[in-house]
Length: 170
Image (cartoon, rainbow, N blue to C red; front, top):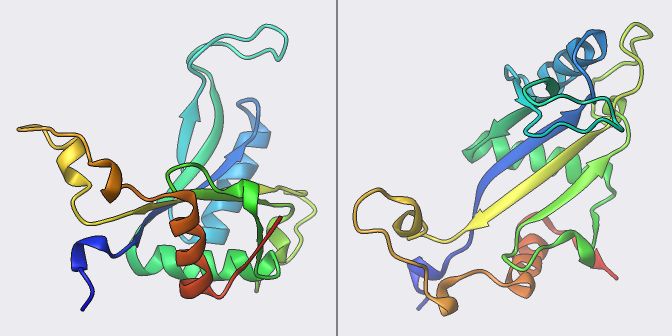
């Protein structure tokens, strides 16, 4: 008998491109994300000013798309196939979430190189959760999640191995 509350699930997938500055490069990044995910991207905004990089607070510097449920699962399968079904151990954080990068959007099936767009890489961040996570984020009667109910790095790695048939390498 397995406990339903202990099941790990894919909560969300965030696909991100950091363009670095507003303008034509950001517009191309938005176009790439829309092609790869099939969703409309949201622009990300700089929270602080960094004079060395030429970034001002409030400036558009990238774009992202959040996928959930079946769309998220299908996207993760495609993205991991590009990575040859291998993930590094250091890709996982202490809460079992993991992330990895893809060098070029043309690696996705059906994507062709467009000389007007150029080459864009993207970051894929996957969040895992268990039922009951809402207790921590709800408005009324917020509580912390008990330590034994949180997902560990090892549990996250085992979930990825069993669900997506991935090899976790050192």
